[in-house]
Image 1 (cartoon, rainbow, N blue to C red):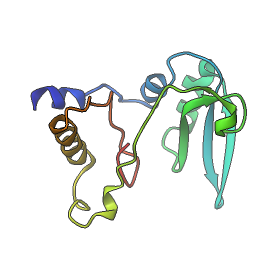
Image 2 (cartoon, one colour):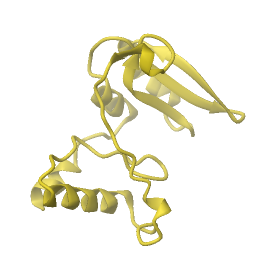
Image 3 (spheres, rainbow, N blue to C red):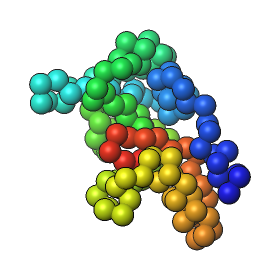
Length: 132
């Protein structure tokens, strides 16, 4: 279990750390989605611009970065580079898990993966109502 706890301590302390972990380099542009007045507005940004963009957006609600990069609008047909594969663990839908903290859900997921001899993910991200 000690190795799994280390897995959870990846230093993602700032929005810039998160952006760099998802997009250290590569092809295509990152999609930024921002909710404004009930609509999602998307814009597309070069990796080099991410540190500035995430600093400006830090602290705002409903701001999301794509986990992969695209040549245009975020559609599979425009996929430039696949860097992240993820699973949403929407534990809020499970009554027996609803009151857990994200790190507790991550620990349970790591235990289940280890029991099945499935490699652990690089990191977990609390996504608001779940864990990815």
